[in-house]
Amino acid sequence: MTLIAKTAWVLVIVTLIIGIALGYGISLPEKQALQQQLQELKQVSEQFLPLQDTVKKLRQENQQLKEKINELQEKLSPKYVEKIKARGKLILGTSADWPPFEYVNEKGQIVGIDIEIAKRIAKELGVELEIKDMKFAALIEALKNGLVDIVLADMTPTPQREQTVDFSIPYYFSKGNALITLKGKEIRSIDELKGKKVGVQLGTIQEEWAQENLKDIVTIVSYDKVYPDMVMVLKRGDVDAIIVGDIMGSVLVKRDPELAIAIYVGGEQIGAAVAMPQGAEDLKFVVNKVIDELMTSGEIKKIFEEEIAKWLGIG
Ligand code: ARG
Image (cartoon, rainbow, N blue to C red; front, side, top):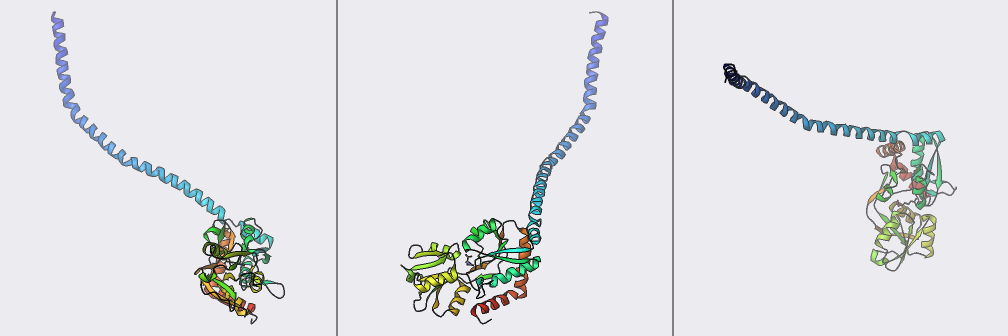
């Protein structure tokens, strides 16, 4: 080996040793510091990861809320009220066969509790009231087809009806259905009805109750109109009993001594509310306001008393 080669070797080895020594000595603390920083960064980013998810979720929720608000605004837009006001009249659908709620008086006018409430609603809207009389069973369809704006027919809000129409707050509570018979032919229990014929109005909760509870023991006959039709068939003896609402039952027997309330069936429940098309939020707002005022002021009670008295011929 030449001297130059030897020297070169020595130089290489020395450089390596110094390099390693230097490398070790200098980089170790730096490396540690870097590693620590890296660790900290990792921890920080780990903290942010779930936050990112939260931000994403919040964004989604925000979007959903915006859509909901739009939907509600759309619903609240005064399309029903505007239409009624532009037309200048509120069209009421009813089944004028159910005193004292709605019936045809001696003068041929449709009057009663529901008509009085409807008049208040029309007044609040600043329009005239137009009444469309039809069979009870046709009312919901008329509402859905836009043939009428509201329905007041002592209509009970039931879950089934609520699937297709909206209801206001209730304006009357019922103690049940009255089973009416001829006086002297009273029935004291459901058992005594066995084998008899019972009349109900088509599409009513009375019909539903009879179908559910009496189907196997009596013959159920459904009619379109209650008063005077169903009362006539009872008097004629075509049926042994008819089932009507509690108030109607009590005024019927008060006015007609041939009739008697045999028993109450079906139990207490919400009696009636105003039915409106589904989504008619603006109209519902006005209707609820009127009913709420009638209830809190006590005027509703006066309407009931006055209309009952009128039907009985003492008002
Ligand atoms: N409340 C019962 C119902 O909603 C009967 C109403 C009958 N009303 C009438 N106007 N005939 O089914």
